[in-house]
Image (cartoon, rainbow, N blue to C red; front, side):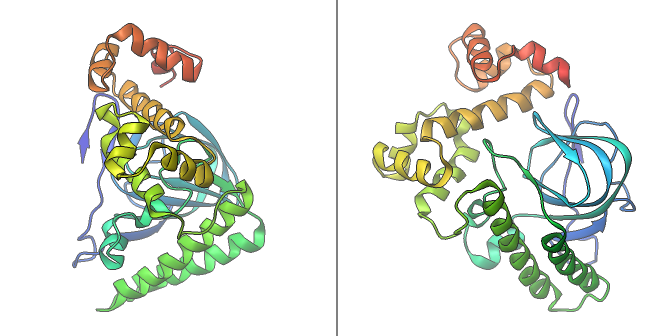
Length: 288
């Protein structure tokens, strides 16, 4: 576990069960050392929360999510989180490293195929009806049960259940938010989403990303609008604002952040941030 100025970062424990296993499951209310207080923190891995009981809010980056029964919350590595619980929260947490799936499917873009992870412009949560929530719980009970009787082939069995759960959740999410549910859309769109995670600090324009992908700027825009509803440049801006907010939460100065992301000076950085958020970086920092 490492820490920044204000935010604790929690890393996955792959050998918790003796041999390496890059997925874990637990009950939110009883999991040892699980952060449920008002402390700002982030994870280095993926997590999906399934709320069965409780009220309050869960802040993910700048977005405040209402905690309520049958709420499902998706978090991606590096997002800044904070709980504010009013009534005790009960439910499941399912968390895993990307390699738990990437290595098996030999697909570095695998997790970018799901609409709810690495999301900048749409909600990272959904409220589902009783029947679909029950279907999710059935899969979670199976995963939990397998952890109680781990065998040599358990990782394969758990991986198959996780894959089924992820696809099921993607269908629910697509239905609620009216977005593309097919996980086999054009691979260049997934490659672009992946590059945004790795190259956002390089200050590339949409044209620059298109060049890296070896496609035309017009084609990149077309597939971005088709599969996300946003232009390539809008996706870049959403991701950039998201990363800037993380730095502000870490108490970095406007000068440090503007240098890191290639702004010509802090005043231009301040104007850019206010144009997209409506508030100054200093005011945003105070919220945390």
